[in-house]
Every structure is written in structure tokens, then in C-alpha cells.
Image 1 (tube, rainbow, N blue to C red):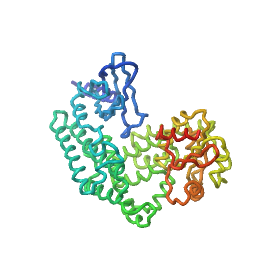
Image 2 (image 1 turned 90 degrees about the vertical axis):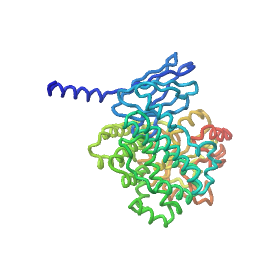
Image 3 (image 1 turned 60 degrees about the vertical axis):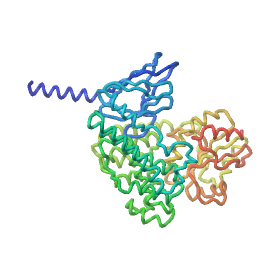
Image 4 (image 1 turned 180 degrees about the vertical axis):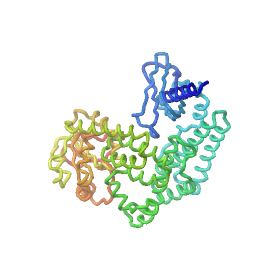
Length: 499
């Protein structure tokens, strides 16, 4: 073969690899009606519905889809609420049998063996210490030493057995390494959830438990590109660093300032200013880039920019995008990310004149929440106190369309009181329009909102964001600490009492 022919073959192979596919097919047992499976392929990590691919099931319960991919990727297959992690490899195929409950029972095809092993690792099942009622978790009552004996050691033993099973298999060396890495980091990700979701109330216990498991860990991934569980581990490592700072004292305690500077390498006041200006994702990135290598940082920041775009938070995506272009000027992600940012800009312009998004007249002069409430006598008021800088607040806002659809045509008014400083006024207005948040809106600075907090919760010094309140049709505060939008039926029941 001539050099010219060899070159042509190489070019053709490269082109084919660039447009490679992964074929997934199978059958659902006892299938009736119209339905589909969902395959979620993350950009880097995180299960966002924007990355969903719907796979139709025909009348015979069979399905087939060809997924265009250029590199190996982990994905999540969901059917009837059952989630299964899959490993998609370019040019390979996978056939699965799904029983009537949604569980996968058989794996075949050229990608069958690695996915069978991945399934047996049970990455989608809750570990023994996270099963049952979270509010009455017996493991959360243990001392840190007993947690090591009764939670960590048996959990890591299960992890190591899964890894040994992978290493003894006949799948490729790189597949063994990649799947083993996911199992390894998943173990820490689940411990992080146990720490901050179950035993979070005892700061000293949290710090002792986390330190025992994280102090000796290295942040470089075992394999790169790394799988999603590595990035969940990375997030948990950031939590570990924060735990080292705030284990004994809160953010407002002066004694936290020195340990904060030791880890973040800036003052706590400077960090809080960055959060107010650029958002929580920015300060997480600021910490991340100090403890993780640059190639990992590129993927982490790219995913976070995309996530902020999904959340339609245009004011906070701009400083992140500037960081990305500065740190990774030649990144292949830049085009994709910039396209998403441009789309946000376009939506923002289109939504500027949306109806039913009403900024309360002379809101800057409002000193009492009852100036707003009394305007709507005869209607129930659901008050949401939030901030554009507050991640949990913005997550709750995504549940508003369902809430408003539930009470469409009813005598209820949705009022949103934002806590942001004066310099964020235009960002706040842009955010509510970009996200199409219908209702009545007003904004107060941190100093100004204190009078309203005192009206709502007299004598209480600590205020949570988000917080929710219900006023009855007579304008009386009927319920403080109301349920949040994500509570669904529980909130709907509360509201219906006053209608």
C-alpha cells in the first residue's frame, strides 16, 4: 500500500470515528400502551433533562436507537423510575431485556459484558446506610468511631469486592480501569450524601467523620477523562474543605476567618463579596482550581457554566465564562458554551415585555410587606423570599410552573421578595424576565429587608433563604414556615385551606 493510500485510510478512519454510533436495543416485558425510555448523557456530569434522549417503544415492546457519540460516555437509562448506569462506547452495541417493573435483566451485544458488570456494581442503588427513613436513620446516631466500624469499613469492603470483580473480568484494560474508578468515587459520593444529608446537624461529628475519610485522599482522577462519579467526588471534596473551616463556627463568626484564609487563600469578606457579585458557582470554582489539576478544571467549569445556563442565570454565567476563556483559551468547549450564553441573551431580550411579570410600583419605597399584601385583599398571598445569589432559591423557582398551573384561575397571588443589593437591580430584573417568573416582584437590600423579616418573624435573628409565608384573604399572616414549591401536594393542601 502506498503512503498516499495509507493516508486516505487514516483520514477515513478518523472521519468514521468522529461520527461513530452506539446502538441500544431491547424489549420490555408485558408492554402495553404508548411509552418510551429516557437515556440521559451528561455533558460532563449531572442528570439534567436538557440532555435527555427519548427512545420510543413500539407495540411489541421493542426499542432501537442509534446514539451518535465520538468518545466513551457514561449514561443513565430510566424506565418507570428505575435508573441504570450504562457505558456507551463508539461502534459498539447493547441489547437489554427489561422486566415489567423497569429493571434490566439481560445484557448482550458487543457492549454487553462491561454493562453487565457495571449493573452488578449497583451504582444506582442506595447503600445500606441510606435506606429507610432519613429522619430516623440509626447510623446517624453513632459516634464517629462507630461510624467508621459500622458504616465506612463494611461499605468500603463492598466497594473493594466490586472492584476486584471488575479487575478479574475479561473486558478491556481501559474499561476495567474506567469502571473501577467510578465504583471507587461513588463510594465517597454516597458517604458525602450521608454526611451532609443525614448527620449534618452535628458540625463536630461531621468534621470528625469527614476528616477521617478525606484527609489522605488525592484529587487527581485515577483515569482521565473521568466519569460522572469522579466529579461528584470532587464536589464532596469541596464540601470537606468547607467542613474544615466551619466545623466549629459559622460563617459570621470571626473565628472562622483564619481557617478560611488558610484554605481559600483570600479573606472571608472578599469571598462573600465575590459570591454577591458573581454567584455561588464562582466561589466554588475559585476553590476548585486551587485543589484540582487544570484538565479536570476545564471539564468542571464547562459543566458549571452549562448548568448556570440551564438555570437561566445570565448575570452569573458571564463571570464564569470570562474565567473559562482566560484559563482555557483553546478549549473545544468554548463554542458550545458561548452558543448557550448567546441563546440566553436572545431569550432575555424576547422576554423583556412579557405580561404577568409585574414589578411592584415604587418597590424601592416599600418598608412593610403589608404595603404589598393589602393591595391584594380578598386573595390568598404566597410570599417567596429569595435571592439571585441563592442556589436553593433558584432550584425551588423551577417548580413554580407546576404550582401555578395547579392554582390557575384561583384567588391566589404569588409575591416574590428578592434580597439583593442596589447594584444588582438590573440583574434581578433580567433574571425574573429571562425565567418567565409570573407574579408580583420587589427587591430589598440586606439592610432594608431586616424590617420585613422582623414583621414576619419577630425576634428571630437567623433568616433562611428561601423562606415561604401564606397570608389569608384578609391580609393576615396565616402561616409562617410554609411548605416550598418542591413539596408539591403538601404545599397545595396548605394553600387550599385558605382558599
